[in-house]
Figure (cartoon, rainbow, N blue to C red):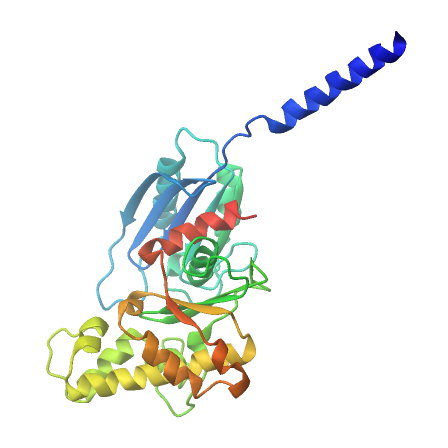
Length: 326
């Protein structure tokens, strides 16, 4: 009798823990912000990366202005308004933010920044105190590569380099399936020197990948070589058959290939995903061929350069992944 009763109790306990372990867990949510040079994009994601609510907030900036001139209080108000709108009615696990600058591991903006109102400001600490949840902040290139590795063109790859090819040249790294951030950031390809006698880029360093391959420099080179188009941009230059356009694009691509060669020789990622405004140009076959010249012969067959899959949304998906993938 006692034996049967004991077995019955054991079965009851087993059933309890089975039901407890298989009950539906509450859905996790995160607010993601992509803060750029002209806008803040705010999205509420669930753990399956479904967008629940989104909005954009713009601040004034001229076409030629490389930094955003906005008071800190005004910018913080915009950021908080964006978060408040996105999270209303939901309990969030955290806030993820992508920024176009160097960010310390504790979420402070470091050094020269286009968002001068946030220079050396502990944004993560400020938001954590205000909202009482996790706050993860990373460079926009880090968000880009994390998004493409988790959800986009590099899904399934463990070692990925994300290349931003636009106004500036940026980069981010995923190694062994995890975002590589040993200190502030890694993968800053644009500031690698490829010709010490070359022009200075925006941070004052001479002859970098960005000073040859960035969008503004491509346009300057085009007009320097006698280009005739009015209001030329990288896309129109890439489509043009003018000798000036071909020569300018050739210089841009050659120096970008040098930079990618450095990445291949140092890191040997299984795939390089390209994003940014110039990623829509028809460059991939040519860029792969040029890169081969600057890569160790034993690694040349490993070169795989692909276009991003998430487009302009990669930044905000990556910001969400800062919270949801941990």
